[in-house]
Image: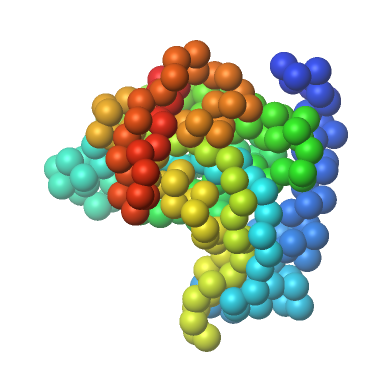
Length: 236
């Protein structure tokens, strides 16, 4: 556990982290986070009698998606071993930053990851979780920039806030712990838009309303699956 630090909102991050840890343990029923497939997903830290297949709960969270820039070109021009090495460096750096900021990587998706920062229905906690997500992006970027590698590593990020359904989904033989819902869909589409706009980090109007990280009014963009244009705010 990191030492007590006071964040920009005058809050004790250690207390925030303890609350977040307790919240996660309550859902998983365990302190462990073992890897695995199928039933191991439940047993490996998810709690046999808490979340079986198809079970879960709706929670509020800050949602962070990340993925590598130019991954397709890189994977087409490098050996499989080299690609896996880059992915592992990227995942490891992100994981370290996420844990330090009291978040949780729910799943790795190809060259990216779905990350959440759970919050209770409290504005102060929401502001802290949003700042932790921003700190995660900044920390990951700084560590990647200082990492020595033959293959340059860059990543994109998208940030949103909303309700998600958080639990195990899948078949009888394989379960995956993940999050779904409109808020997750929007965060994912925002990441696509970051690529289209050729920028590194974007956020939603809802996220920006909490953090005021971007001072302009955003850019209205048509996102796949959404009937109305969505305001996209370029953070970086």
